[in-house]
Length: 156
Ligand code: HEM
Image (tube, rainbow, N blue to C red; front, side):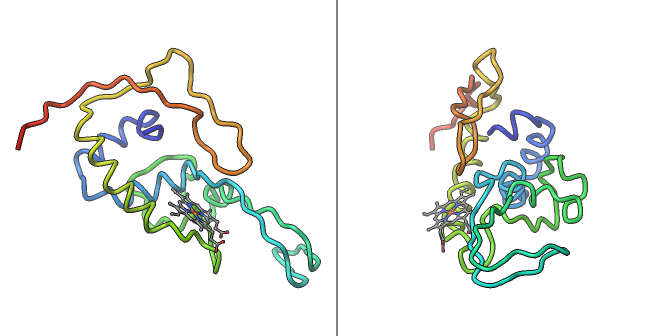
């Protein structure tokens, strides 16, 4: 909801082409990765991009930064529901990649179209800008109060 509040033009594109829901969800996870950082521990000495990391070291993986790497994402600071390819690592990578990724994607595919069809318009309900939650791990707004204009829902 935050991505679409900030980029109403992208919301218009998604409303006009609902088939973009899958790619829009991937772009949300890339652009506002809830997991900004992850840890690993080296089991052996590693050479990476000209740097040496000794064995048995804690390594901080900057997922949020990787997801805006211009070498992989043209115009990386642009939220683009049509972005393709979108090789983000918002759900991690390798044998510890997110076990709940399929569930998270399914929840978003169900919830987002419902919200968008129920809300004709929505805006931030507070005069202040949104506040990020203080977090090492899961990032996002502390709260996101919305003022919404309901769409007429026909009884089935
Ligand atoms: C948008 C929602 C979610 C995001 C962005 C997310 C992101 C992540 C990330 C970045 C990791 C670390 C992957 C790595 O170390 O390479 C992870 C791990 C994990 N996630 Fe999620 N996750 C989400 C939802 C969920 C849900 C809904 C569940 C469970 C129902 C879940 C369960 C797990 C588990 C169990 C792991 C640890 C896997 C392992 O260490 O082998 N996640 N997730």
